[in-house]
Image 1 (cartoon, helix red, strand yellow):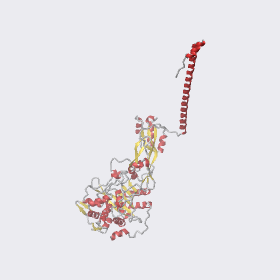
Image 2: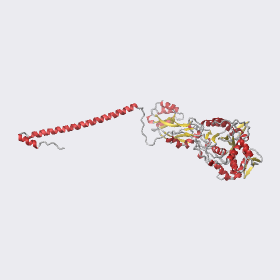
Image 3: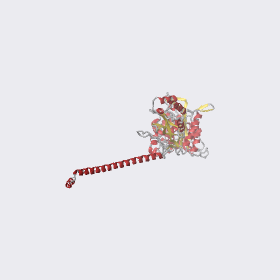
Image 4: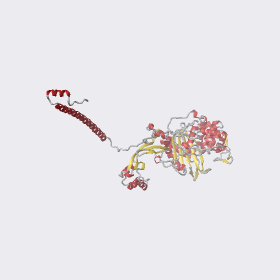
Length: 597
């Protein structure tokens, strides 16, 4: 910028020529320079004021807009931000095969305290102990007054309890939103579902995780955010399950048993329609795991999946099925049943003296231990082990219940000739009732090994899964039907349903060796209809005793078999099975085929 000169030469020379004072020219130029400077400063000030006004207008407009939005919205209590991953509580529902809810999530509340904000800790502790009887007022007061800033009181509370706490008016008692698992049917299906609990916990959320049963086995799938809206559909039929549990509870009480198991399985697919273990529990109020004593005495113990028992004469079916399939015997082959049968210092006896010989068919019908042992000896221990392994009786089952993997069958490391004989009639090899149901389905359905499942699916075995021939399966079913019509399981017969099966009574092993003579496991494994089985049902009672005319009867024919019949009468109509209207004295075709061979 070129500054204006105060004494311009041209004007000074002109003034001198005219006789004027040159100093006046300098004064005029100085005044002009000041006027120009003032105009520039004014322009800058006006610009600054304009910009400042614009800023104030924008600021007040923003504040006014924000206040308008807040006044139009719903008031929400501000929360302090928290670092780390958010806790996700969502979990997919579990439903039965027909879509009935078995497990779901509900929104509830948690209760905690901030002692430093409490007005009257003593009054609050006393009032809380009245609302929640399981809380101790003295312990609460100690926690409220020992300097803590945060105290958990209850992880979940009901709406009624929340209102009672709210009515106390104590500002230091606060609530947090919480999702929890709900089992709307209570104890029904307890051992299948298992239960859930909390993992990671915060004030405003908690992680729901499975702790047992299918909840634990399928935990990752149930917690998958991409599949939360997709329920896990089980193969269980809820009405059939309720009927099974009702019948088992009544039978357990009538027979004075300490425990009971009921399993209903589709013979051709392995899908389980009902699975019950008594005593049971409510998964909404799951009790703690036992820390001492026999785990089997806890209601948490799943006898169907975890219980490993020597299931007695139900195993004779497998010895005969193997011998028939190998061509070693036919149903009419005579077996030496003279006894007692001795092996070293051990003696094998029958429950009754059945005479010197029985046919293979009658070995099953009369349930001869000696006959089953001699049949097993004709095949040898190695062949027996291979056959039992093909049936799945020597390995843990691949079932979708977490406890199953922890209960593989128990058998001796050294498979002696004595083991071969005793396993043939159900001693020396301990398996779960689920193993037994699976093996019976595989033998009776035409000879195809099934894989048990509680997940609804369309999976069926193929010819590659064959364990025995169709002819063998047909002959075995004939024998099982004969057991019910004229053998040890007459009390399992239900007119119109053509029941076939086998009883099994096994003395319970004692903790320090040997067997108890007055404690047994009574089992009946049945199929129906025997000519073309659709279902397998296993009923087992732990230490049953049926008192008739003052006598205590412990055999499965008097204990498990009648409970089976009661269960079938209740369940068959639920499953849509109508009784066959044919007269009961019609000739059984399968039995005729077997006898004429």
